Length: 166
Image 1 (cartoon, rainbow, N blue to C red):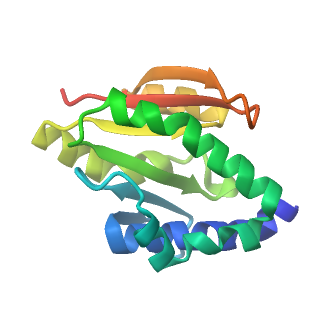
Image 2: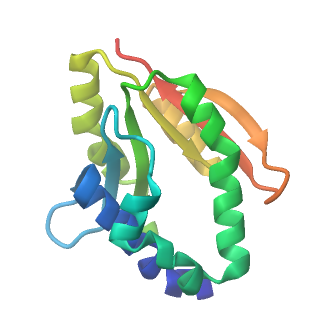
């Protein structure tokens, strides 16, 4: 319950980041989901950009323990992001669909336009997840698992994925 209450405050700066420095796709009408993509050559979040959209205020919103786990996860996967795909790739920064709307094809629809653009341009796509239920979803879209690790600091199991153009 507490996590659900904090989610809008957590995701608002991530959405803002995508609006300023990436591409945001949402469902039509009342938003039930969103995909935040970071474009080729711009897939690293910089301190300056993070501060510009309020990501630096997340510790006050989420609390010290939660933000420590969040940054531990980012630190765990960042080296793989830098080595497992070339600099020119699309990065699925965030994909979220309201729980009551999951399983209706919205996630696929939110990803499809950029997946098609990446395919046309011959660029790979990359993402990470810590949600076991997402693994089959991404595999079904053609992504392959690159890494399946457990972060020592947070204890979270994490997967990294890559989709190469066909």
